[in-house]
Image 1 (cartoon, rainbow, N blue to C red):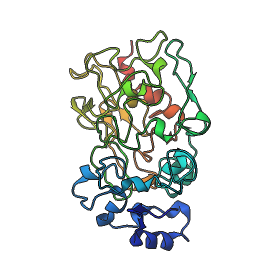
Image 2: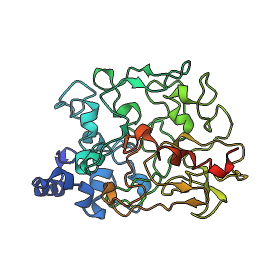
Image 3: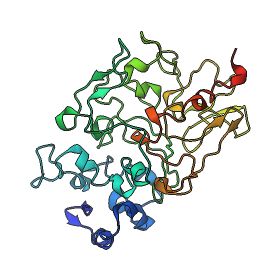
Length: 346
């Protein structure tokens, strides 16, 4: 594991932490659990944790002429490869210097580290195919990505410099000391590699920048989703009609983050849901027990990194990897009845 560099010098405090934990098994180590909250600025670029807007994306963005953050990823004379003077040889290796799933701190490797099997994933540096990427047929298409051998890598979806990203939204993820945290744009690009459209918010239209053949209104038959193809004001992840409580059939506009109440659509539809379809993320997200309309389950995360089997959802690694096939929230009819209760069927 690398020490953290700022201004060309190794922080003594970080060095001590790293050396002290070298003997600890990888599956037990996480830097967030090893440092105090007041020391977030070591990696996140601010000595003021009370001002999360200044450090929520860490070394990614918010640069000034006096910043030292560039040295966190780039080196002028000691780059291992020829790629943008990165201190690691690939984009993947550079990103995983900090976002390393072997210690339960990243978004890849966390599920396997808990002894479970990954059901589906957005695999980096292993594919150049986009399922549903062909708008004319609904089939897969190939793309020239930024990873090794033109395979998909982290920078195809994420902007390491926080440029032209989607609007911030509240995600489910709990990491170390983080308890939900403030909204973040997750460094998601408005135009991922290969996209032909711009999506300013995280919702169906963002997914469709790559998976164009899955979008409603294409020539192939798909489950309809709320998007700009069907309405001028589509729901997005941070603005969707959610039920108000576990036993309620009423809805209120809000975020899907840090809740399970946005994954059901009561029948008959509420006035807020009228004219709207589900968004991609209501079917594709971290695996969880959603319940049914009128009996939606509560959201419970007590520990980070999926270490508590009873948490709902247990893991918060989507869209990188999940325990369910096809990155689905639930499997089989459990998924369908979130919006189509049996009593509503003709």
